[in-house]
Length: 274
Image (cartoon, rainbow, N blue to C red; front, top):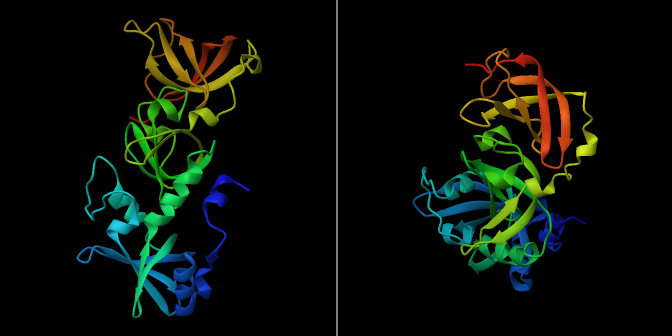
């Protein structure tokens, strides 16, 4: 069983089978229910959750996450509004917080707190990308628990933007690094890669890569991204064609060491679109 499966409680009612009696039972036994976001009310600061064909519930913004949540289109610090938008029509887990008459109020925050206890000791978690910035990737590691990856923890290759590695909607496994004061996990994609082994790269063989930044101001060489796991250095010669960031090149492996690959240019396969 994966860590993700452990996070989702076994005592969940399937969406299609939910009745009001099921909700009452879940409330009494502190069980988890599954629903999806049917509407978002900016005025009332809540989300309407469909639990079954005849059953709806309400999830207040302040119960949707462990963090402050507002329905604003711009939040450069952390994409909570984007997170709410991503919940639209997506299944979510929540606890029944109260039942007054036939009005059902849910708490997703309670599920997240339970999930935190399980995630803290996890070595690897599935990471679902919810938003990207130039130097950071935001994602969900289960039940709305937020995590983020900075560029140094995203890959071993040199990149200018996280868009070179992933985009919104991508999913992959990550390793937990630490938990910050706001309950957000800092995780690493890079640490899940297979260990770089120079013996897998034989001098004289051809390899394809993408040009990155120059190694110095004299343009004596370029960093070449062979894969997210491996980068090399291309020795640049005066008779070589002009190379720019993003160009795809074929190289000959000169040598492979623990520090990386040393490469010689064979040919330029394609130039970056300008």
